[in-house]
Image (cartoon, rainbow, N blue to C red; front, side, top):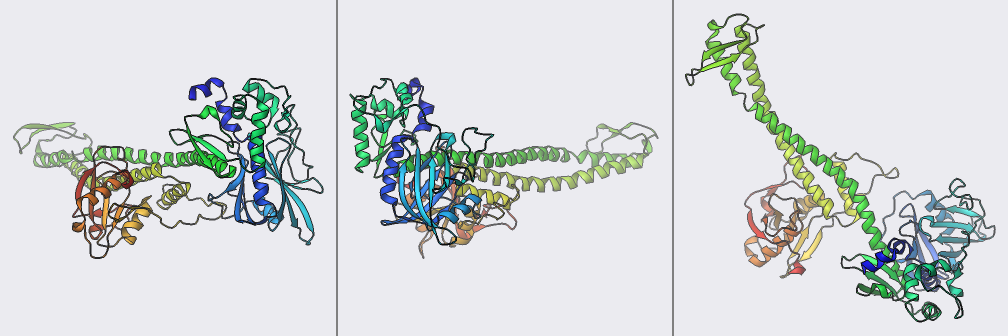
Length: 575
């Protein structure tokens, strides 16, 4: 399959053209049926290029999501949750002013283009009815969300303002008359008739017919008649029979979506959805969240890795300093021998050879010719005293630095294990609290702290197990949530999550069957840096034997009375 796509030269084009004119038509028909006469109750702007409308319709509340991101432009209904900034952007505030409380009177597609218009009847400040039009242009890097006044045709505002410096033909700025994108010299897909002469090559077909992507062009040419196949698709859309579908590869990544079968993806998983919106949102949300997640996690990972590299370098230098300081006993010996043989030392000498009365062997001691014999002895005693003091200081610094290394390794594991942006935000907050990342306010307000929500599992005997997702959550789970009789688990000397077996009143660790201990230990190994290892050591101990030293880093605890098992990492449902 991949060879066919690469050979066609369309792979990159497919990824950005999945939302074609036919999908746009299908979405338009679907939204018109669902949203007409619906009331816009709330308006949000989750991202710089996103708009979310909460609409009350005859069938209940729905959320309409619009994005003009160049890689994921779309318009569809969604059930997904989006994080909204605490301080709404200016564009969002303007949309609330003009759209909130308005009713949707129509939803239409502009010709055969990837442009959807939503007409809205609302009231202005004086209580008069006014008509606005929300235009969503889904055109790759030129995608945009625009609000215009229908009566004057002027732009009220646009989420991405386009000045004359960017586009001489078409500016998108408040107060300017809205102008549609320039028409292409193509036959609209809605106007194809049985007698229409069309190319028999997919690439040429996309150049001749407007509103079709390369994927659907190849599908149309796969049958006996382009007109017949297209008429069948349009009939399914207009009768409400069209179903969204997404093609998913072996890695679980969505490769393509449409509202009709795409034969070239035969062999991949074809997942069907009750509506086109569901398919569109599933496709983009999974692809987009994965890409955005990687983009957001990489700077955080680099920050932690840089701090870890710095701590490792410090450990190396401290080790060298400590090694040098531990060789300071010779300075004490030099001082003692010089004091005992002071009468043998001539003024101005650079060295003196004396007998080491500890082993009876001769020894040469370097001297500072500018100092007297007694001064040279005092100098060596001072060097010895300074070195002994340094040993204590370096050892204390080395212990603190070792804690920093363990902490940063655990944070790095948490970043690698994080599955959502929320988890990354929690880790970033933790790094800000510990001073590894400079605190920055978002839109002038500090981010609201999330409540701990550890991962929860149920073992084969019904025992509940909780797994911390980051160090702050590990602390909360172990030191606040846990009971003294609960069982705590952690991989031995390996960064990982705190795992807690929640025991019922009266049960102790000795009451647990061996298979449950191993099942929980496999879970602890799975949520550790050694996830891909064969036999992982896991310590387990009742919570009563765990303590957190004052001033220690998040997630750091000490414990006694522990026992250790070796286990293969595995989730309960994999057993």
